[in-house]
Length: 241
Image (cartoon, rainbow, N blue to C red; front, side):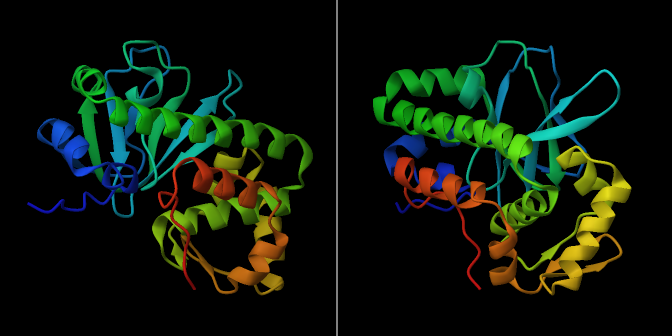
């Protein structure tokens, strides 16, 4: 029997035998944007795999109400028990950023699968390395790069995961993910639009010139893609113009 696509590239890149180990325990949900999957301080009991066009984020919130995205996770990955091995208090909030299908797997089922298959365990360990690389790159990016280049990098990353020119995100949401004031984000979005890289509408940012956006984006975008390709070839999605 041929392996069927799940819509999540991390799962679909497993061998047929490894996927068959966990397939019976996978649960599918259609979740709306804003759904909380992981709450800081609570035990991680599931691993969540965004499928098709769903995107999730790991978000750090501060006591003054500000927050920022630490990692974006779409069809290339997972959040939750894949990284922490579960049953440990979560540090970041895991939330649905773009609604869609999410596949969930209990930590107990995942741990059993790891014990049964060294190749499956290695596969998810490699992904954990990629997610750590993204978080570390985010720290450096936020510290040394200007907001325009960070925004361009973020928009390219969303486009890769949605595989679409149209990103249904508000400028207020962009500001909250990148940890800046909404008025500042609006000004920089306007600058990108004047350069012809994007077009904005109500609740929409459309990428009209990806080449121009890649010129504006910081080096972090390319670094992370190349690291992903070395560690897990063929898993990271790249939008094909």
